[in-house]
Amino acid sequence: MSGKSQGSEVELASVNGEARGDAGVAHGAELLGFVEAVMAGDDAQLSRARQSLREVLSVEAFVDACAVIGAFNVVDRIADATGIPLDAGMLGMSAEVRSELDLERFGSSANTPREGA
Amino acid sequence: MGGLCLDYSAAAVPVRENLQQTHREILEHLRGPGCWFRGAQRLAVAAESRAALDCALCGERKAALSPGSVVGEHDRVSELSPACVDVAHRVRVDSGRLSKGWFERTRDDLDEGAYVEVVGIVALLAGMDQVCRALGIPRFELPEPLPGEPSRQRPANLVSGIAWVPMLAPEDATGPEADLYVSEFVPNIMRALSSVPSHARMLQRESITHYVPMDDLLNPEAGRDLDRTQIELVAARVSALNECFY
Image: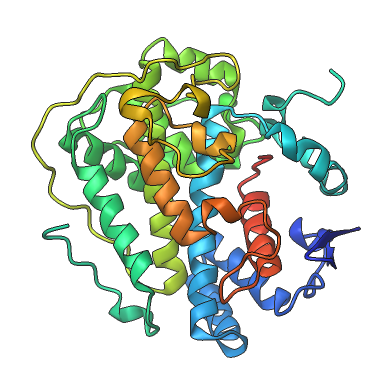
């Protein structure tokens, strides 16, 4: 299960937490471990994950990762609480990835009309 | 931006100035009057959203197969209306399982504009709190409220029927909202809070510094020190954990 980003294959199962590894992305394992630790409640796990990420990323890239985690905790809440549909232009572009990730299992998928409906 | 001094020293890494500036702007934004709430009320919403993390009812609902199957009262920390408290808690803790039916029932007790204002406060604070957690620093204390009354004004030309809440299309953004959107492509996420224009403006500024500049949203090459593929991997995993389709 994979998708393309910047011309490279990304292992989509890692996005769903169904596979371990780097997802085909540079330092992907450390990034995914860090995201999961930030989103969970275990401070000791977060401390270890932060240290692992700091060892492979520049200081600036580490701060970028922290910022993106923040950005999508904003976006996700707004999207789900306002019931916005996926943008028309994104529907076709993301169809394969949405299918691979089985995103329609999320309740908020109901806010986006099915293609052809 | 007088007065607010935020401490990043525990991060042990330098935090770029535009992130710090955005965090100061968010807190300044939250403590001032909005469209439907005074500054003190907006900060009460913010406090409720943080209290939700330790709310027994929210915890039970989060663990339940269906959040609607668990009834009770939130562990509240303010005098806000029950509807406000419920929105603040649910959006903070379990936004991925909000439903249109719940929204429509909530709308019976909370004006649509007020609902959007609460959602924006909760979301902006949740994001900033998670940045702090990621950096390894304490979350910022909520500031003192600023005086002033809410404007009680809605933008003209809001359109209903696309999302649960009415939104302002870029081509309809005129008058005081003529400069509302800062990019040519305006995705629905940036329109979602447009019934509270100051929220929409704050969200765009937050997105520019925390994610990528608005005009680079569709440019797969645009990144930062973290490259775009890494950025999107982080974003996708966060959204999966939040159970967000968008």
